Length: 153
Image (cartoon, rainbow, N blue to C red):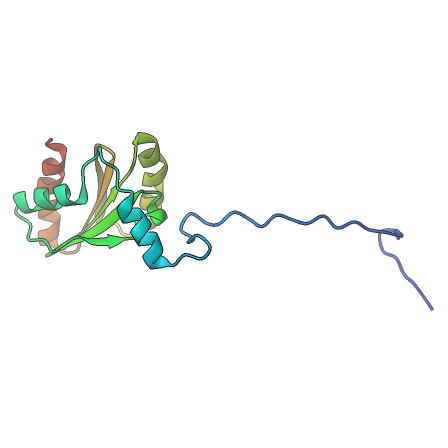
């Protein structure tokens, strides 16, 4: 019998268990599904920030015809709650954050997701991030009015 040891031979070798990596920010908790996650987010909406509904009303006041807000996954953006609002020529993603620190940590996640789309801008109102993406030239003309409306308390 021929035994070849590369790098030295040892009688016993102890293998230490390696802890699994932490889940990605957008990963769902064990035993939970997407509906559970969306339900938790909807129940945890922050109280002291601009809401999705207020953004929708400001869009309407700026002359945009908008549909009903549709909840979307907030964890992807490091937010507490997110919803999208569709308008003719304009897509709007509104993310509510619990505080300024959460907003500061989450906004770069949103910027990274949308960096491939050149026709967009992100504005903030209190602890809420509003991503405006214009889909048509007409949508682009709405952006300035919407941004101004969001800046108005």
